[in-house]
Image 1 (cartoon, helix red, strand yellow):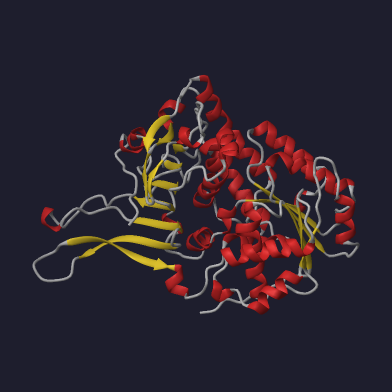
Image 2 (cartoon, rainbow, N blue to C red; image 1 turned 30 degrees about the vertical axis):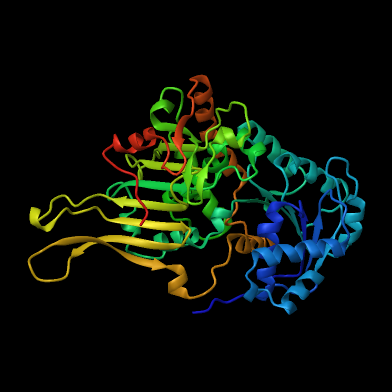
Length: 490
């Protein structure tokens, strides 16, 4: 089975932070792969920019090394690499002083082509860069700006940043990127729900017992201590990635798949989330921080040791019991958990259906386990539908809980594009369906802020957990006191 690749219009892709980790690991490889797939039309260009002084040839050497490290050798032909490197140029520019932006304007030129400004920089520079882009006359009607998370650190700062960027770019030109929404499985969630008669009639509180959303990492700080200790897991993962996944599970069917149709329905979910405040946060939320332990690679340091001294009450683990106050989902809990240095690297959604009301098979047949739909985002994208069947063979009726298992890699036998590849091409096309609208971002913060405030007001300290486990014991208690248990990936 093959997929059809449709070229995009010629474009200029300007990367601010062009020598940073994101550009090296994700953006340059994604752009290269899209060129190899045949999506670029000449004279598309890629212009790198950062404060580092560098010639065009030096930046091409940098890009070549990045591709050699992050693209497999069989995909990196000399011809494709040479074609890609010829598209690259570089202009040093400083967002804080404006130095270099006149040279950048000269490099871009006056051509009326699509201009993508990708801000692969620290969040503190987002507003400054937007202003410099405007003051130096770089915004045309075909311009787009791409902003990585986090959009602010609370509702007030998110509004301020949205105001700053919105004073330069129209909302249709602003692409707030969440790479989780570019994953194949995330989009397949909408296909499963809205293109199959099997699931949608059951997708409500009459048939679904609860939903679990897990985003677990085995890694620690990975050089992000400066950012992470000011953010924590709630800001870093829940406010964006996990709430977006929750929205896709819980939203109503949009009238069409256009950008505003989808985002209108996600917004309704965010606004329907029951508030968690000082009276309920202690019961409905868990904060954790990893201690020394063992990971797949052997012994690892604790969070405070990785910070190299000092004290910190920043959470590296969060578990939340959330509920949605509407007719479809009333009474159905959504259990969220995310953390670093956990037992395995896995991101998945588990929709657990209600058990059958009565088993006709008797005790000898074994326990009848509730059906589950498990949607795996990583490491191996796929879908499992757990069903009860008869164990083959004579000797009476014995029931067994088994999955109908579909791995995307095996089912389609094609290379699975990285999320950034899809999202970058959507930016060039001007398709905002998989990007967050301003009111979505602010509605998410409106739900997160009271949790942050209640933690601070009630001095809800982090609970230690050993690296390589599934977090604090209170996270297990959060779900088990409701008679449920966290899904164990198999």
